Image 1 (cartoon, rainbow, N blue to C red):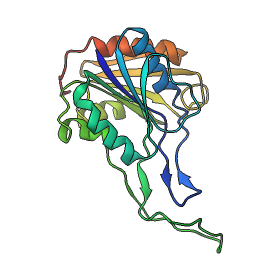
Image 2 (image 1 turned 180 degrees about the horizontal axis):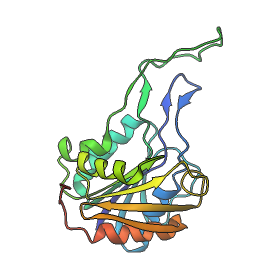
Image 3 (image 1 turned 90 degrees about the vertical axis):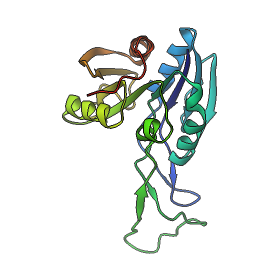
Image 4 (image 1 turned 45 degrees about the horizontal axis):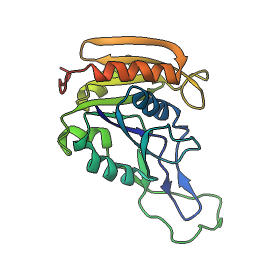
Length: 215
């Protein structure tokens, strides 16, 4: 199968030196790309900036901003059977980006932000994607409820949810513990390495019959 994976954070520039980003290391997305390639799938990895090595056998496309990731996914998704959108895309970006470094001239600096394009939410409605759609929900509370709501709103086949408030999993960790949310309910995957969890996610995703929206 042809599988598209997004990974890592995005960087939204403030000026030539500074940017807005988040704590995503990209490890889960890179593990997913590696697992899919290991299973013999053709994999395209679209990644924001990370310090990780690209898994063997994976086609790699680096991006930096949410807009760049949006445009890249839009151009590629109609050629894929499964899209796994694991990247931690910035929700907001500065409305204006300074051409020169902003000097420290006062005690406060106000930034006006605007929403970035919703990649996962655009897959069905704007891109017309009909393949298997897998999204991620990084939550700090009401994990299952929020993930199920996202499954419906974004018309996903599968949502992978995890609790990013925990220190032992998720961001900056080699391990994770997730809930797999589908229209049929929630299946917990116990704490394990991101590589092992990635193999389970690839197995579940490749067995889904496309496209069955949640109800």
